[in-house]
Length: 110
Image (cartoon, rainbow, N blue to C red):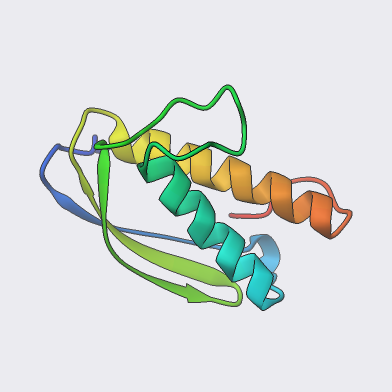
C-alpha cells in the first residue's frame, strides 16, 4: 500500500509487471486494448463498464512504455485521487479483459 499521497500537479512514474513475471501483453491486440482503456478512462468516450465514472481531467498521461511483461506510465495528477482512481480502473478493466480472453482467473499484476 502506498504511504505517500499523490499530490496535484506533480509527476509520477507508475509501473507494474505481471504476477510471477508473466507476460501481460501476449499479442498486438492486447497492447491495443490496454491503450484503448487508457484513452477511454481519461476521456468522455463510452466506457467499457457502465458503472465507470469519467476521470476526464483527473490525470494527464505524459508518456508510456509497454513491454510484454510490464508497463511504465508517466502521469501528472490534476485532481484529488486522480492517479489512484485511474490505476484502479485501468488494472481492473484490463485484467477482466485479459482473463476472459485467455480463460484464466485471478490477479494479473503484482
